[in-house]
Image 1 (cartoon, rainbow, N blue to C red):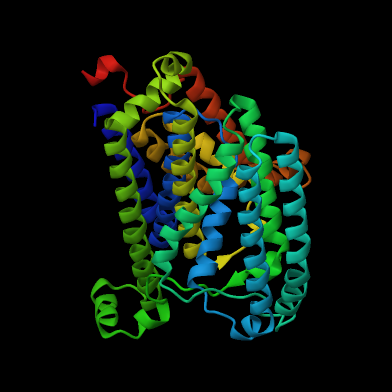
Image 2 (image 1 turned 45 degrees about the horizontal axis):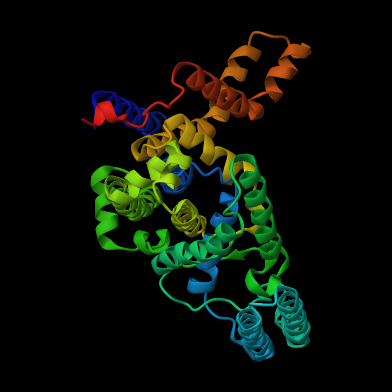
Length: 439
């Protein structure tokens, strides 16, 4: 780590410490936890864009799949819903699997006759879909009718929530594989449009299939890997510590819970960062950078560019899925309607660009900087508006404009940061080391 990187990280730590001292420790730790989750997602995008040069703007789909995994893995099962429609769902799933097997058999059997093969496969898939619907639709209707106000879905497996983070990455990677195969021949803006459209399809399914995760009704009360504040407040050692520190018991319990989340998230980020650094120094990482810098030359040297792009696409999506699962765990609820491109695509891309595409340290720093600005810009806007309006008469139209502006200040600040960094540091604040710097 060079001097510039050390100074930037030290400055970020000082800013976060000032929030803790001037505002509150709870706010500072909340920002840190969200920064850590954003850093995980930024690392996933950095693998795709910074390392492989793939312009994927479907990150919100990966984040949503990761969040959905928390529900499917860790939420308690709704046994009444399983009794009402579980058998029908399993029957429809079996029919779809059988249909896929038959379609694959026809595809291989009729390989020498492409027209007949296409027609046969299409007929098998269409027939299997119609047959599966005969069990699927009644089953889902029965499931959604079970205590619709508080349930109306199958629930999960009731497994530890930390396990759902790993499974969220697996789910996002499994989804990314067929998407990567479908978009293997696309580059740049065409890939961006395709991945964005596919992510919208994923979100449409999550929002409308209420039997899966209640749709837009949200799943609340998800389990967490840390104690509850009420449990900590009743613990003797916490009460003793509160008296020794002179802090209210409720505040100390909240701080301890947030510190526990910080430890979990920091461990996940550290493991992913270490693995990516090792991978980047391995032959795979050097080959990916060679493909990114000159794809035609890499292809001329016999490298399977499409396969390597698929690997980077799946790996990056899996990392974003882990971040999405962590965020749902921190929130304690799965909110399907909250997945918007601004939060789960644009901001993550800005983090990578500002931090330094291709450099994992830069991506992590960009996540901390951009999320901190995003959270604190409105607070700073309120303070500036209050100071400015104190000098203006109540009926002054300029005063009304100042009072309404803080909510939009974050967009202005974000745009200014992006413009200035692109002008004076086009490779990011912590750019990727060139071969000359690596010697």
